[in-house]
Length: 467
Image (tube, rainbow, N blue to C red; front, side):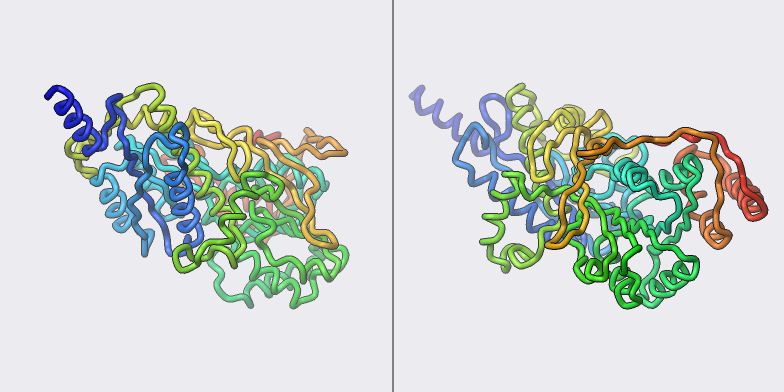
């Protein structure tokens, strides 16, 4: 009789997803995907499948289950509905994407409700809690490469949908290093002919160096116009500020004789990458869209790595016998005042403590959930395809043959009038974020004065530090 009672108890504990140690047998995670993240969704599901089919109970002491919401729009109503839907299901953490429109809503919910959000989206400039950022920041690597190439006059084409951090760093470095930078926002351009007009205008100014800071699709459209106009001949140099250098169509640009450089977070020599691709290339695309015949995006690799991070964090919590069970109601995400989840801090702490080797190399985080001790490879296009030439780790670029030197000196800011006219809107928003200015008018007034001065004369400005 006693044996039967024990068996019944064990069965009930298993049924309700709780082990004798107080740790769930099933970890529920949420997924928030946008219309453009088809391959990333496939990589996420494939990573969960690989984890769940692992026969090693030490590596797989619990089952991962996911609930996915696909966002048709990134407006605050859709994002709120999706987040609250996930929260009410009692998920332990959420994996997903944000853009410029949805970022503030998502990060506010995460902070208020102590729900960790693991994301491959662009890194957030400000310090936020409960956001684990899989994508390393690129600004330090970009600045180091520009210094390595000794660029002092160039065109910067940027898209602020990924935040303002590189824009800010470029502008501060222009002041600090006496660079002449013509900056153009191209985020709202939908007509390829508009890119053509910009390139023609830059050609009239005899500009031959371009830093392009956009996502892959927009970069490809810009480079198509570069080739069509014949601006890919010897003497031109294009640096692509994107972590997916090998995803970009570069052959036609290179054939003309132009130099092309960029960044890569996926190292094809990495054994984790090789093992993943062997399995990935055999998948049925009906079940896993954009596998096999579509080049692997770096955001898909980050999505795969996110599952490694989540699994490792919960293995740690289990070893530490931390009770993370979500018993009873998951709560109302719109309650006022907000009622945070009591185990949320333990989960966030565990996620930040993770150190694993993934498709994007060494993965670990600082106290704000940002990647640290990472490696970004610098590639140049050569005969035969892209070739690794440098590596960048944690904001310092190390050439294999030459050290990067940073110059400190008294600085001059010389800026084109047309470029300056375009900056105030971008930089006002940036300045508001950075200094939390209380008055929008005061910031506009400040930049109005700066523009007036810059149009009439060269301005001497002291050293500005950038991170």
